[in-house]
Length: 119
Length: 116
Image (tube, rainbow over all chains, first blue to last red):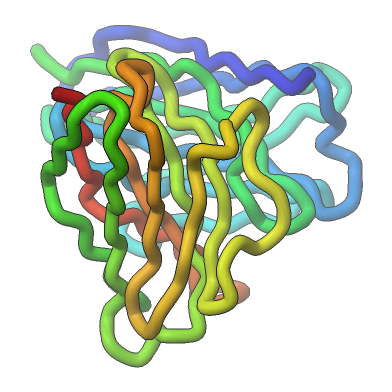
């Protein structure tokens, strides 16, 4: 059974750096073709893809946010970490991590964590 | 990159059928699209992938047979038959595009399905 869970601060101040951790079980991020992605959803709005890391440590970022994002993995801990710099109130959203299978499908998602950006 | 367009809302009576539409922007008629169900307060759940030939691969875990897909031209459809109260959710479509540094994952705006 594959599960993922996001963790991190619920409130950050403008200009601060956000660090989110995705802790997963039921799969290995060293398996060929597998990846973990981050997606966010502002309240009442659409899903927005942020970043993806592959089993071989290859990384992909949303072009519009690339300068602010860093994604890393710790295979031994079954964790993926996303950092986003220079947070702004418009970054207030629920942040999800998801398992990408070898067919390229985001087939399992975490429950999400709501991050509010406010002074 | 493709743009995915979804109507913001849809409704159907209990026991009826409904078809949700995800429309790809021009030039992307060969793209596959993934459907996701998002119940209130929950994370998205993969439903199934659809191309012009219909379902691609398998349905997501626990997706009932009442859910089916079709693809035609720029449209990707998700049909739910014999709608149940538990089907009241937001439904999102998504697709990946490109490779290397040009890779992106795009989502539609989502359709809120209300069960009457």
